[in-house]
Image 1: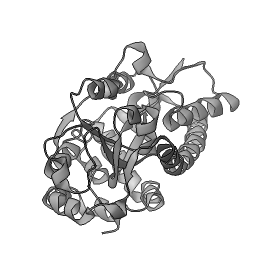
Image 2 (image 1 turned 120 degrees about the horizontal axis):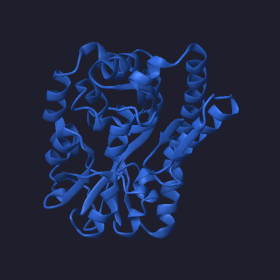
Image 3 (image 1 turned 60 degrees about the horizontal axis):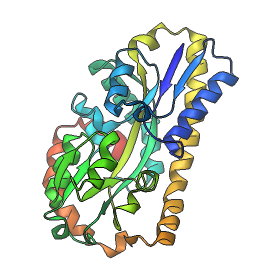
Amino acid sequence: MLRIAGYQGPSSILTQGLACLVKTLKINGWKSDIDWIPNVTEHQEKAADLFVSIENGSRHIGYMASGYLSARVPELEVLELPFTVDNRETALSALDRSAGEILTKAVGQKTGFHVLGFWDNGFRHLSNAVRPIQHPTDAVGLKIRTLDSTLYRATLDAIGFQALTSDVKDLVAWIQQDVVQAQENPLTNYMGFELWKHHAYVSLTHHFYGVLLLVCPKAWYNTLDQEERQLLAHAVNTSTALQRQLAAEQDAVALARMNDIGVNVLTKDALDIQAFHKCVKSISLNARAQIPKELIAAYLGS
C-alpha cells in the first residue's frame, strides 16, 4: 500500500497537486493500491504528525514547508532569507538545477527524508485584525502567528511583531481566540483558511518566498526498483508542473476575490518597503554568513 497525505483542504493548490500525483501514478500503473488522505488535520492529526509519519516510513509521500526542517538542515535557510526573491520563476528554475541538488543532498544526509521535488508556496504577506501595516512601527504591539522556523520568527520580531509558532491545524483557532492579532501566509492560504473573516487588513510585503518540499522516506525510496523510480519521477514532474502553474495563478485570483469582499489591501507600492528591509538587514546578513557560498550563488545568483 502506497500512503500519501497532505494537510490542507480540498480547494488548496497543494491538495490539487497531490491529487494530480495520485492520478498520474494510477494511470501509469503503479503496482500497489494507493491510500490518499488530502488533509490529516481533519483526522485529529497535526501537520507535524504527518512529517513524523513520512520520516518513519508509515506514510510515503507528502509535502512540508521548508521552514519546518531548517533547524535540522541549516542549508534550507537559503529559502528563508527575507526580501531576497523577486521572481518565482527564477527561484524555481534554480531549484530545478544545482541549488535543488545541493539542498536534496543536505536533506538526505541530515534527515530520514528524500526530496522528490520543490513546490511553490507563494510569496508571503501580512494580515491582521487591528490596523493597516504600512511601516514596521505599525507592527509594534501585535502578536503574529508564523510557522516553526527560527529565521521566520527572528525576521518578524525584527520588524516589530511578537512572533509565535503554531501548527497549521491551530491557525484559525488562534486567530478566533485572539491569541494572535496577525499572521503571515501566501494569499492562497489567507483565502483558503477564510482568514478574511477575521483579518480585514492585508499588506503585500512579499517578505518571504515560500518553498515546499515534496518528500518521501529515504529508506523507502532506496528500496524502489528502476521502473518504480521512473513512474514516481514522472508523477512528481507532472504534479509539480500543475502545482506551480496553480500557484502562479492564485495571487491574481485571490486579490480579485479580496477586492470583491472589501479587504483593505496595501500594495507593495503603498508600503515603506525600505523601512522593512532596514529592520531585517542584520538578520539576513547573519543568516547568509552561515550558508555555503556556493548554495547562495546557485539559488540567488549572488
